[in-house]
Image (cartoon, rainbow, N blue to C red):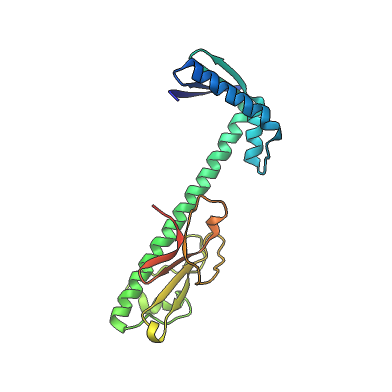
Length: 212
């Protein structure tokens, strides 16, 4: 594509697409028309897909020379854009909370490792709340006890040969922690993954989202 211009008016939204080649514009128009003719039989499992079908149905196409003009009624186009923007905002907020949670887990881990240097083993306690007096303020000024979603962190300490092992867990968005036997990394952009757990142990994550 050479350029895409979107103009939003009170009644119509007009998208002007230019490939820089009349034949290319004609091919685009043919593709749009084919999709439009098929839109009635397309599955629409969610609200956004339904709006997409409606957009295709309502669109008028005009391929004339240097550009392809797609005109859609504003009341059809804007709700779809707003819905997409809302979904993107939710994803961004979810990623932000995941990163904040992972940052807190690293800070907690550093405090526990400093404690282990002095005491030879991970601090004992059934929860991070129970570790406050052992870790704060000497090893960490303020000990986070809840993740970014407001749910209590999970904590486990090793004994015997594993006395210098510790585990910190978060139940993710849904707050349900599914145990310590989870490994690997997942993509937060995939539907359903926003509720997955996060697990940190001895300086590294071994289950959690892929983050940049």
